[in-house]
Picture: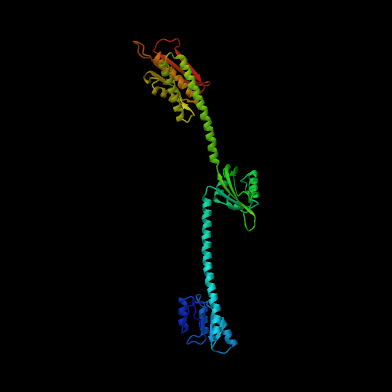
Length: 410
């Protein structure tokens, strides 16, 4: 009478056999005969109620006894939920079994739905946690606000940029956090007021961060909650302080480079005109002009090595010796260590080149017929007026000027 598709039926001839089956299978309903050999139905029901595995199985007692309130109370007290009386009416039996069959199916379906919902919730929580972790690791600071700029979210990136923990600001107003200026907050309000027409916004602003004032780029997204119709604002903040500083330095360097290029070109033009006035032939002009340009180029190299800050006078003199303008065997050099400005370095390089060239052609280092080479004494001192450099030649042809003295600010 109970058999049907999707229903599995087990029979036990004693309470012991029934308990063994209940340890192996998950039953949804038990028909228990009150009169059984050994342990009766009421005692079996009490044993079932004492085990966590069988406690929830509904029990319908089967009995041939007359309707008796005392017996009914005994069965209900043992955990039964209903009675079937012999002789068994098939319609009543099937009806009561059908009720519990449907309840069991619903329970199974609910358990499957519960498991699916639990898996979906776990997947959702994992996705949210992953998204939050990525947001916290991102260089962007993510800030979420409602229509009144009350803070709903404050990522780890926002904590790093502004030096404020989420616990201090969440639930409060963005204006109270002290990160953005009033004009920037007003701009955010304008973005929210335009919800529904423009969803994405961007701006550059100066904010207050962990290290004081910072430059930042702000990207805003405004969405409207379909349930409430209220807009919300999400801000992604990228700190650009280092980039702004780099741009300022680059602009300064470009300006300085342009200035130096103009000065260099002016020096080359002056050297060309001076050389042109004092040269009588093209080969002579080429030789003298090339020498002066090389002296200027070597001075530029020295300044490049010190990033155009301060050049050493000793290094400048050694460069002239290594270039062959001054003969190391016939020059005596003395003087303290002196740091020269770029302008003085360039001028002094040309001066030393001219003095060395003149000494080699006409002065102490010239090889007059039957006469040995003389010597050059190059010395410098520093006093209150600046740098004084002395160029003295001995042993060469007679000259109207026994020595030369040049002075210039360092």
